[in-house]
Length: 435
Ligand code: GCU
Image (cartoon, rainbow, N blue to C red):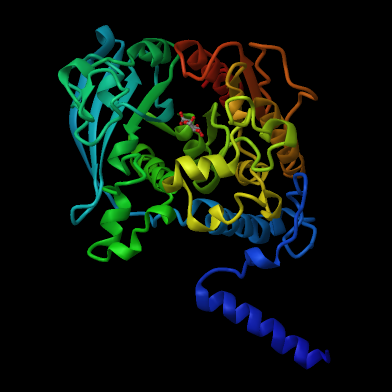
C-alpha cells in the first residue's frame, strides 16, 4: 500500500471509531484463542506501553472500552441525584456514632437509593469510609427502627422477608455480620445501600434503572443484555457523589467493599471510578476476581456435574442478567476473550485492591485469583508502587497487605465480623496508621 492509501485507511478506522462513539474492537469471529493471561501493558494492536502517559491516555481507555464491550455492558451515564438527609441521630450505638439516613433520588421517577451512613463520634475530622452494597436491605444491618425498611424486592433467603418483601422481623437480620460498633471504634465510617434500589437481582424481571432508561421501549431492555453488575456499579458511584460532599467523611479515603456478586461490583466500580481509593472484592470469584480462563482441572465437571470453580458458561447460564449479550458468545471459547480479569485490577492501579477468600469456597477459585493479582502486579510496578509482595499464596489468616493484597481463611462463603476486622487491617496499612 502506498503512503497516501495507508493514510486513507487509517483515517477510515479512526472515523469508524468516532462514528460509533467507541473504539473499534475485534469481532468474535476475528479473534483467535489466547491461552494464559496476557501482558496488561500491551495494547490490543500489539504496541507496548512504555510511558505513564500512554498508560493513562491509551491503555486505560482501551481497557475501559473492552470490559464494557465484551462483558459488563455500558455502565449507565451518571445522573445528578437529589440528596435529602432525612435524619441525623448522634445517639446511635450508645452515642459512639452518628446515624444518617439519606435518600438519593434520580429525577423523573428514576432509581431512589436509601443510603445509610454511620460515622464515628470519637474522632476529630472526617472519617475514612467503607462503602458496601448489601443484599438484604439497610434495615438488616441494625435493629434500630429509625432505619427505614427497604421497599423493593428482596431475596426470600433474607431473614424476615416474606413474599420478597421485608417485614419488621427483618430488622437487624444480618447485624452480627456487620460489626458497626467495631468499625466506629477503629475510626471508620460505614455507608451502605441495597442492590434492589438499583436493579432487583432477577433474570425474569427488570424493574430498576434499565427499565427506567428504556422508558416505553421494552426492546431496549433485553434481559440477556442487561448487565446488572454495571448497574450496581453505577449505584456505588452515585453514593460516592454524595459521600465526597459529606463533611463527616474523608473524600480521599473511600473504600468499596462487597461480598460475592456485590464484590464483583465493588471491583468494577473501583476500576471505573477513581474517587474510590481502595477496593475489597470479597469472595467475588467468576465475573470479578477469578480469571475467565479457568484451568482445565478446575473447569472439569465433578460427580455432581458442576465444575470445581465457576466458569463463564455456568455463570452466564444461571445469571444471564449480570453480563451483556456479547459475553455469552465466549461460553465455549473463553480463550478467545482478548482480556482477562487481571486487566480490571490493572484499571485500579495504583490504588490498593484486596482479594479475600475462604478455603471451602472453591467455587470462587481462590488459587487462580492469586494468579490474577500476580498478572496485574507489573502495572503497579510500572506505575512506581508496590504491587503484590507475596510470591505464593499465604497460609490461612495471614493477610498479605501490600497494595495488591490477598487473604484466605478457613471456612465457607460468607462475610463475617472477623472478615471486617481484616478489611480494617488492610485499610489501616494502606490508608496509613494515623488516619
Ligand atoms: C452464586 C454465583 C457466584 C456469586 C454468588 C453470590 O454462587 O455462582 O458467581 O458470586 O452466587 O453472589 O453469592
